[in-house]
Length: 132
Image (cartoon, rainbow, N blue to C red; front, side, top):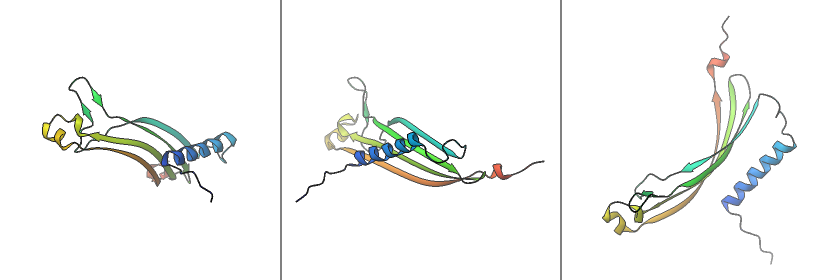
């Protein structure tokens, strides 16, 4: 019986980012034209909900998660472009960080990895208006 390794969402994300990197390095068709737009971004995320995500008692304790992602766009015409965005983040909250004693007694906490893939179309009506 053959066993297959389990592929986590992080591993899948790394595979997608690696594939995009290979395409960019080897030459994506149209990469030199102004029709294609590629980008990456990074930042931090913070949960804002019922569970606390930070505490200022006994110093600053905060639950921040990384945000990494990339985006691509292709101009179909001067007025329309197709867009895609992929991001990964981790959110967490913990009642132990709450200022309210009742919330601390509740003793809830969570951790949630979040992946998001968005496809859309962009319309720029002003680019199709010709004056003069």
